[in-house]
Length: 576
Image 1 (tube, helix red, strand yellow):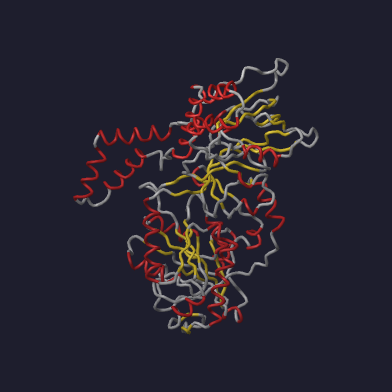
Image 2 (cartoon, helix red, strand yellow):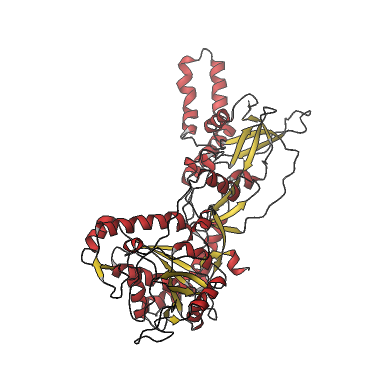
């Protein structure tokens, strides 16, 4: 569906041209009377005044400054608050002093007032020579500038009339309040459009200069005034309107990436919502597919996925939470594998589109958010977790897993493992008390929900690594998990950085370490791709472990921001 839009001309020096015309036309004029007429017409002061106004408007259209931001005063306030929480150097004190001065605050306030005002030229008066019989006809005149008018048109198939299909929130047409959905378009700049296609009408608009005059028959249906959208959603997929064959107007579409926060401006259309990027100063909205429409078409085109459980090795480290997943080599000798209380097939039934979110900042009296680490075998997830624990043992904690195997002489109950009987373990499984569990050599191993609560109750950040399909069931108001995906670099970098490293892939008592093989690298890359493809919409952060030191630094920075900054979380977490 075409969008109403317009360009701008480049006429300059019209006053000089008009003044020179009579002299230039003199050789072609037969009588003095005609020459006098030309002098009178082109010398008319009102004509010159109109031309000067035109040139001023044209200059304004090309040169008018656009404010970089509209909230300088608020930004300055945020900066002052941020600086006050930092060590105060002489430069910081000087900056704080400047930003606190009344005259600087007043200047920023004036800047914001000017930035928000609309300095577009006043619309010319409406024509008063309308046919008395056309009581239902409205003449609307809008000044054309560089932005689209923000409306789409379509041909009404039963009647053949050209009607306004959609008004984009925040666009020029919406701000004018003069054009409404359902209005029938009769003329554009005096040109009848009843027999023209929407594409031909767009060409007329593109060739128009200055003000654009629309002759319309208002819709009988009255618009209900709607408030600016206060609903925010997190996009769980990438979207490019230029690649969407179903969108009614590609120019009116809004592109976004997975993880972007969008503000919903209108849900009047069940198929196409209007939205803008959160924090975008441009008030104009764009079209995005609605949640229902996107779910429906993705479900239809989505191929059936044969889900294979993702498993990794059991690494032995004193005082450190073991991963009970099996490596690729172990699959050949172990029939049992990790399970979750919900299956992978259950997860693939849900089509990720959007999730309604709200800002959240942890309060001092609240538990820390659960941090979930996800990654394929050998990516270095356990090494990163170990470095975090060592960096601050009082701040970070890990869960103690349960097992039904006998306790060894050097082990203590509740330290390496919580030792329990098979009967109690199976009872807890039936009561959904385990996040995930598995069986190895006729013994159960598992991570309980209570073990996570125990770490959080000590006012520590709980570090938990699980299979990705388990993440969905941890996303609750109680845990408010922040999910970090540890991703491997390219296979070339794996060969280069892991050539001297070893992987523990044996489940025997010795836990022998073996060098990485090419098959290990291929499996790691493939496993990461499956994780990201099927569960990437659940990840809050992705860190590529190209270099362990740099990856740890990025991970530590992420943790620090998680505890102090405001983040977007599902609405259900705060309004359950």
